[in-house]
Image (cartoon, rainbow over all chains, first blue to last red; front, side, top):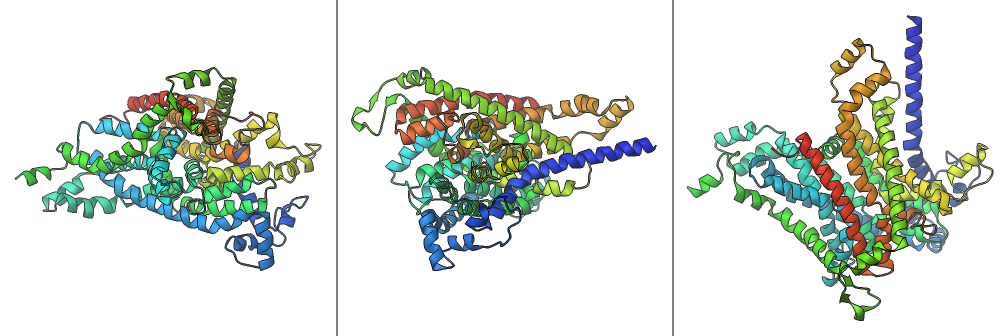
Length: 296
Length: 303
């Protein structure tokens, strides 16, 4: 009995040790990014490194917003002019990601409804088509799309990125939503129809309210994938008029002497929205991801 | 009368309504995907370099022949294979281990579950920036820890050495994608019926045997799907290469996706760039077929 208890204790200890390893591996790099963003340039280069900043400061964040000591702002401009592209880029990224998330709901919901409730023979073929589109490597269509956008004079506009990001997100959204709708009992809508609702009313008052978690998941996942996208953003955007946060953040890495305090601050800003979405909507996202990956 | 028919019971086949409801998506995707794919193939059959606008002409499969007979391509293909195989096997192994761990009760599991999704939420560009800072040759934390711990005599420039640039890239990729695999595998693990373990225990199976004969077969399908999706992700990896190594040093981290980008946008050779793009697409396409076959077999699509 005592031996058994000991074995149980060793087992728990080993599990905790493995847990600690994963905790450091997964959380450590994020922690270091956040901590660096709160340091001055001098403290960032301290040897041995300060794991907890001695004098944490929000100076880097304020600099991005053009706030703070004017002398320091001048120094910041000389160190890395791109710091002042951050604020407009933040706005661009938000506009793009929110627009695409809404467009996804508008475009994917009717399509998903059609798959789940209309019982059409061709639906399998169309669904396979969407699946196939989701698998096309972006690098394959970035070149022709660049030429097309150039001919339409849409290079360096938010519109071009909004359009392209629908390609990334809509097929996936349809896929998730249709399996979501299929899992919802059709009897509820049937009884609404029997009670005299029109088809539109049964969708509006019965199906859509029940499907809210699925719609939320689709909106969040499409927001996150536009927010993080880089290839199309870097190819299509030339000036701060359409540069997104990922493009500006990456541009810091191009300069000869890398300003890691600014880089990590830009990194935190870029990672913050997806991070909070993941935190608050974990249940929806995990459900969608698991369904999306296990089912397609 | 006709109106009533169109809006009748939900389960009656209604092809017209079906295509009306799908038309926004179909039109959008046709414009953004199908047309560019055809255009891209057309371009790949041309000599088309922006630097020589007067020499644009149809050359058939010459771009493909040039590409497939160049050392540059085969070196990139080798790098792509190394990157994919190493990053996928590590991601899937670590992700599965993490899922198995999170499926066991132990103190601290809640914290681990809470931070688990963090790296997944981090955009790939930021992932690249974080690792660039961690691996920095002068002030990077990894050097500080290794030198401070006495494991290294002096700091190493991990990203600018041929021998370590690729492993560094793989490390960053693995870190970013372990949570996704863990989420999927955890979802699959939670569907294993507990009775199977009870039965195995009664038969006297130990921990390893229970894993080998109960858990693993139950997970095999999720594992295969994760392998296929991760392969597609690895094949298209571009962001972190842009930020971390820029394909270098030399061509040590030049994969096919990177070569496509550089050929097209730095060398402005659209013809050859599109030929590269088609080669990646062919590889991905055969993987997709495999993937759809797997889904089909499982009955996820069909009906």
